[in-house]
Amino acid sequence: MNTQTLRRTAAVAMGLALVASALSAQWTRRETGPRIPPVESVESINLIRTLSHHPPLMEAWGPFGGYILRGSTLPDRDREIVILRTAWLNEAAYEWGHHARAARAAGMTDEEIRNVAVGENAGPWTSFERYLLRAATELHRGSAISERTWAFLKARYSDQQMIDLIFTVGQYRMVSMALRSIRVEPDEGLEPFPEDVPRR
Image 1 (cartoon, one colour):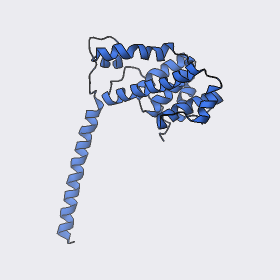
Image 2 (cartoon, helix red, strand yellow; image 1 turned 180 degrees about the vertical axis):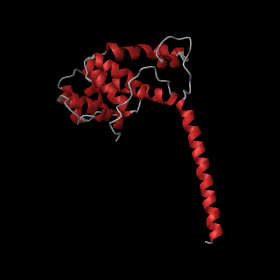
Image 3 (spheres, helix red, strand yellow; image 1 turned 60 degrees about the vertical axis):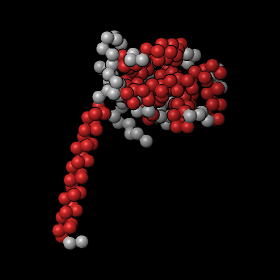
Image 4 (cartoon, one colour; image 1 turned 135 degrees about the vertical axis):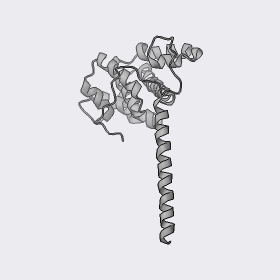
């Protein structure tokens, strides 16, 4: 390949790189805004304001979500551990921010909230809490709780609690999909993900 051809090839490559960079910047800008804007007339958090575009869905989903959040058989602390773990695994920052608050209200410390992101090998979890974190991770990665994890949790939990555990993870994974796909705008004052915890 002669010098002129090399120069032409380099120029083409540089041009393509510039075009790719411009397109990437445009895509990044587009990704920052919501795909469906919140309903301005609704006074609530942005998730509810956004889903208010679909009243029949809200009417059906609202009672279920309310049960999972406030009426299930899971202890508050256990519930928030698995919700935060699900939010972290699904990279749902909006969900994490809201439930970091709820976790504190349930008695969790700042260190414990951060350690949910690290996972079951961070301390100082109880053995039961480690298996709760493992259950949330197993449901996320394989859609099923393993035999060992099930047996450990079932030694304390009732049948109803095991079912509520599964449906809690499922509910918040579904919500994560909606939050990220629609790009729901964050509410003011939400706590971000812990910056010092790497994703694996």
